[in-house]
Image (cartoon, rainbow, N blue to C red; front, side, top):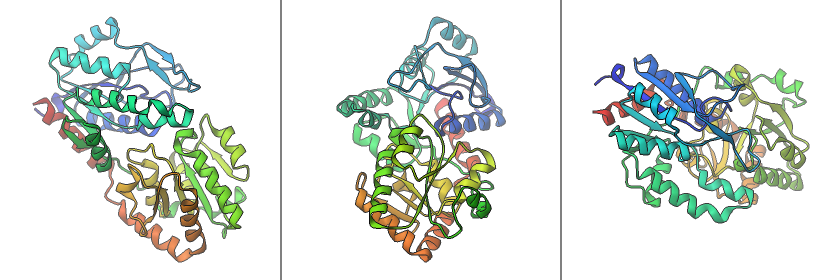
Length: 379
């Protein structure tokens, strides 16, 4: 079998209606598969105004608006007979499920019934989300449900070795492989820095900008970020806060860090310029499985201060490309950021080391390995 023989049925909870790192990775993968000659059909909830055009043929799956104040996302109702009929007519030879939601469970069950190989990719640490919304007691149940889900597929692809280790501690026994992530190095590099753009935002050339990059949602550690900024202010450590991105928690975050400069959503080369405009990238999230934004900051030559958690521990070399800090330790985060603020030479050396560290992350290579995994599973 070769790539042109692949008929991929991908199931996604959000393929293109809200832009995030997971669906952008999936779209890149499907575009690579199509370029290699594969046929792709994607099953996902849709909206009237998607964030971007999808790669592959997109079939709309019936869905509800996500409860719990996250109405920007959709929750598929399952796998109705109309979708099953479409699948039967399409005749996939591999099923790819990208989330342990209702749609993912039903798709995996359908694949087993049809004796079609089923691969799962893991993108998000869903079990950590409830702790940010007062529902932390549900975390053990979510771990159990994910363990059950991933043990029902033929292979699980995770973005980092730390996630592979975590799944093994959960008791996942299905074969686990690595589908890493790539970087657009033409977009994310130190040459994109534009001090004129910073000045237009009110950030002086000698200001040290501590940056956040990503969707503004509570599970990204916004509360810890705000607490650390307050700690730096109490210490009298001079700095500016640069927030790149948007999301439902923007108003809440703006109240917590009123002195911050919010750029809003940035895309394309504007995003590369914004990332290079940071002097320190601060990522206290413990929900990451890889950390696309971390590699983008490193590629731009920006030192990183991150939680010692999945994703970051595979990317950041503590004391070399930045610092890894115990999650939730506000004072330790403040210590690390203060050290970088007060030592320009350290910022420079850490940024240069980070830029060098991520040069091997290329989309073509990582997606080619994923296509090889499809082929190995389909034989």
